[in-house]
Amino acid sequence: MDKAAKRKKTWKIVGNIVFWVVLLTIVLYSTVTLFSERENNMTSVFGISALTVQSDSMSPTFDQGDLIFINTNFEFDDLIERFNNGDKLVVTFVASRTTEQGVITFFNTHTVKDIREQNGIYWFDVIGDNAPENSVEQKVGAEIVGVWTGTSWPSMGIIIDNTIDFLKSSTGFLLFIVLPCLAFLVYEIVKFTKIYSQYQLEKHVGDKEKLQAEAIAIAKLQLEKEMAEKAAKENEADKS
Image (tube, rainbow, N blue to C red):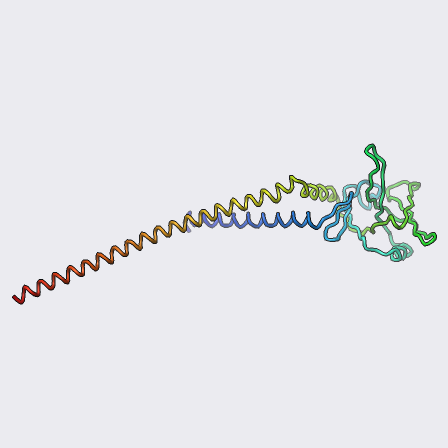
């Protein structure tokens, strides 16, 4: 295989890689922006909820910065049954904290120490595994938004949060949509220009060869005509 053919094959492979990278980038961006929701420190994608752990209050079960997965589709009767069976029950609830900027609301996840019912209302005593014994909080059932599935990804919470925030930003839109589409457009223009130039070259060569063939055919006919006329004159000369 000569150098020109190798170079052409290489550029074709590079073009295909660029195409698939651009396509996958657009699909990734579209998936994240269209199907993900952020509410405080909770992220939901395709209905699957995940939380970024904000502190080490539940260490060593999971640590600050970990990504934990939450089941938001639960029944209180199931929670009570699991708790009564001695299962470790870790729930996510709505919490708030007063800062200089005002009151901020976020989701917190702690272990259930006790469940009781008063006047048809469920109350949950929750505490962090790494928290002092006197830091038990009481949460009404309406504040419980999910149950920890038992799955956590160490140190992935901050990475996921920052990635999603970046993808949804104007800079992320520029880098993952505008620039890839522009690069793909430039690639297609260059590809079209090369194909069109090749077509024009082949057309020019084809036209040239066609003209040469026509010229040869005309010259051949002219030569045959002249030879026929010469032969006729020689025959007349022999007869006389």
